[in-house]
Image (cartoon, rainbow, N blue to C red; front, side, top):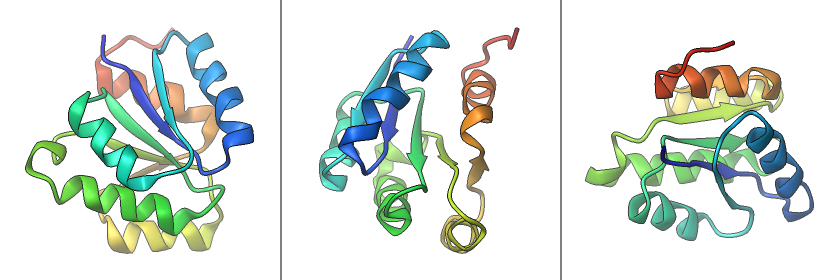
Amino acid sequence: MPAVLLLHWDWSEVIDLAAELQHEGWDVMTESDDGVRAVQTALDHPPIAVAVSLRVAPKHGRDVALALAGQTSGRGIPVVFFDGDERDRKMVKRAVPDATIVAWADLPASLDRIAGRRSE
């Protein structure tokens, strides 16, 4: 099964977040530093979805999602945003109207739906 690409712009936290997803049965690729590298990773190794944190630098996450959608081969890759405050969520919804935004606790179930996996 393809991996999930997890984007969280704090390198000291991304490993712990990835470990939580791995505990849920997901293979996880991470990026915490470079949005261009994140887009290139998604295009070179298409994940089942890109999970974008809105906890830190939400505009950066939004811009990565828009850059990915701007690439022909990136348009079919689902993007799920997680967490962030209400202002950040609204900013993402304005820029990416069909965005899925969930709480961190709901991310595994959202990924399961995208992948067609049965939630236990």
